[in-house]
Image 1 (tube, rainbow, N blue to C red):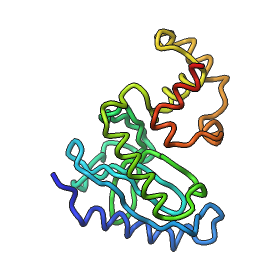
Image 2: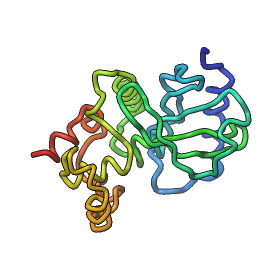
Image 3: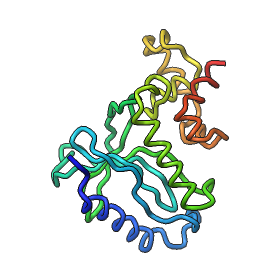
Image 4: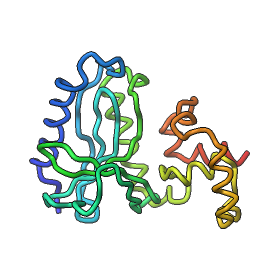
Length: 197
């Protein structure tokens, strides 16, 4: 399946409308950026790519069927095995595009000085995510990031009680991701290397 133009155009149109109607005046908007869909390709019967907006950059999973993921609630999480490994997506829904799933790469977007830089980052993310050579070096599954942040080895992963206890004491994932680690480094496995030292 080739990603239909109407899906990509509908996605961009809907998020341009959101920018004009819901996001106007909010301080998290990077005015140097615009809504753009990048690198969409067929994956497991759906369309997978990156959506750039002035307030976030997300992996987006779109289905050609209108009733896709109707058995799931908005906000539900679903793990998908991409070529580079497992990624946790969240179910969303918007008028005009229906149900979709998203996985955050960047938010907010102030580290991008212009659209070309954001597009280059989106293309690099897609290249990394769809490359099997990166398997076992990257993950955006929250539980996996929590485990690695705590410096636990793969052997310790089997000790579910210990992991649970430590996660309860760990600072929130969003707070950790505010620290100066580029998502490009995360996609290249820098996160794993730093936590294992």
